[in-house]
Image 1: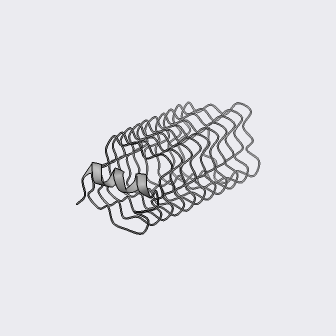
Image 2 (image 1 turned 60 degrees about the horizontal axis):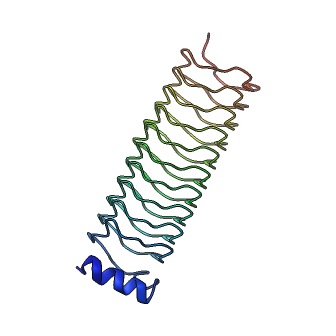
Amino acid sequence: MPTKEEILAKLTEDPNYYSSKSLEDADLSGLKLLGVEFFDTDLTNANLEGAILDGACLDAAVLEGANLKGASLKKAKLEEANLMKTNLTNADFTDAILPDSKLDEAILEGAIFVKCDLGNCSLYEVKAKGAKFNNSKLSLASLDYSDFSEADFTYCNLQFASFRESNLKGAIMTKALLREARLIKTNFENADLSGAILENADLEGAILTNTKLLGAVMKGVKNRPPK
């Protein structure tokens, strides 16, 4: 396995050097990797804690089990990337592009996904307490069986998304677009959905205890629980 210094030297010489190559178990913690090309790179179980990957390309990269705690990936591209079982605690993905990526069983607590494209992403069984998704696209995303308590989805596009049996206790979803969303057995206790659009959403078995729905659009809602 190459050392940090060797990896950085190769990338300084050629930012594309590790595309379609393996850096499995590599230690890249704390490195400044602005704009690097990790297209189709195998970063399984790599240590990227605190790394700066702003503007990097990680399309189709495999990061399963990697540690990205506190890493910065602002404006990074991660289309169809595998981020399953990654540690993304307090990582910053502001303005990142992640459509069709897999984040199943990842830890997203305190992570920032503001103004991101997460369309059609898979986020099964994630731990995302307090994560920020403001102004992001999550249409068609699968967010089932997950903990999004106290997360912020303000102004998010969540059309056709699914939160089956997920915990959104205390979440902020003001002005969120939840048209045709599947909210089956979702816990919205103490959540704020003021001004949200829930047109034709399915609320079968959902928990709405102390949920704020001021100004919410409920036209055509299916299976709304009794007050």
